Length: 372
Image 1 (cartoon, rainbow, N blue to C red):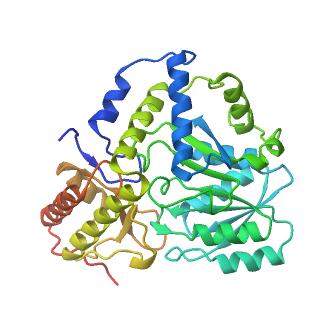
Image 2 (cartoon, rainbow, N blue to C red):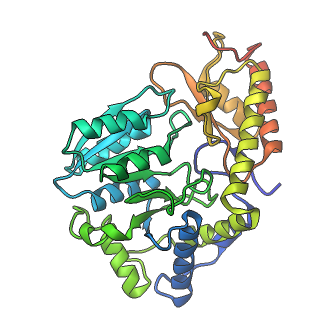
């Protein structure tokens, strides 16, 4: 095995040895070889969403949230009105960053254990004419719920509204096809389902809106229109790029294609998720979400009801057995999360379940059953 502890988190993820080794060379950011890697990565990202005819892709330094903020700032005019469909923590973050950039933001609240509703969105768009753009989190990583992207996109197109998709935890795993759905911007990152390392995001921008994006951004570093224009002219990044992150992503995309692309990656993650949920059920654990709304990306489990349970001890116990879990993101009930993504398969998921079982025994907890 080419790794240390296995990361069962929504990112950073466990990566392959090939991806790690890609980072052992230094690159000059203006060098023709690095410019060629940048161009290749951009083209292959467009391949994944079949977006060559309809979209451009603009990479950006920083975490995925940097790119979400950049997308909103670039796409939404300063007098725009953004509606965020809110069924979790990352939806709330999108609303907050929209407001902090001086755009008008409204939220439409849904239960954390349910997908957002395209029908409810349509009713809101009919009732509030000032809304110009809708923000959708495709997979709300706070719980793991999958939101209905195609249905939301259809409603936005019908009513002539711009759609900004945070596909951070879904891109390259869940199907997204630019030929069959319209979106103004779609945001993802290097360290998620492509199984690269963290440090850069990228935004797909619809060609038809590009010219209208000029001058929207209040930020120099996060102006995607300017970044795209400069890359088109020179092939280079405007500011120092994350060179090692980009070449690692290039290698990760090569492995993604070798595996069979999005359908194959989704199939592996689905098997990981099934193995995890079935194994944890054998220990008494109950998932927070119903199976029909659970994306195979990250699973939220209710915490055990036993008085000996304390997340920090539970976390350290699992870590001592080689697996890194993730804290819960809910405020009403105590939970923890286990990721199903990264360079791992069902064998690692079975080992993770065994590690959780060993940790429970060490903590004197006979069952993971929650207080429900």
